[in-house]
Length: 118
Image 1: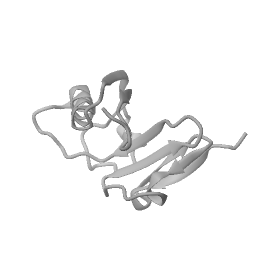
Image 2: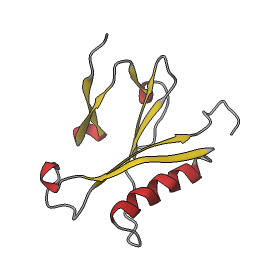
Image 3: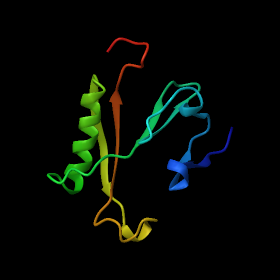
Image 4: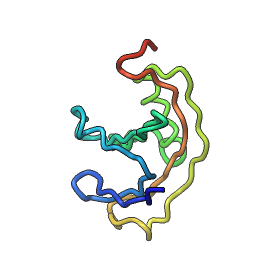
């Protein structure tokens, strides 16, 4: 089995540990500057890391859910499921002092690929 690997994101601003078999989609097609997109070569599942603009009208866990649901709406997702929303300890961030809070949301969205009908 291929080992996991740390992969630099957004020009090395931070990194993520990717599962075995992850393919960087930017090697295959253009990807917007605010996204990092990976897919698995066997399962056809995608992992998308997206930097989003601050929305001052929502904070905390509600902000994480707002962005996740907004992206699902833009992508015309057939299903949007939030599995977990958890705060990130500010001490663990590389960008200490730049934000008052940080959250990570794990979830699933069922979205048609470019070649499929929604």
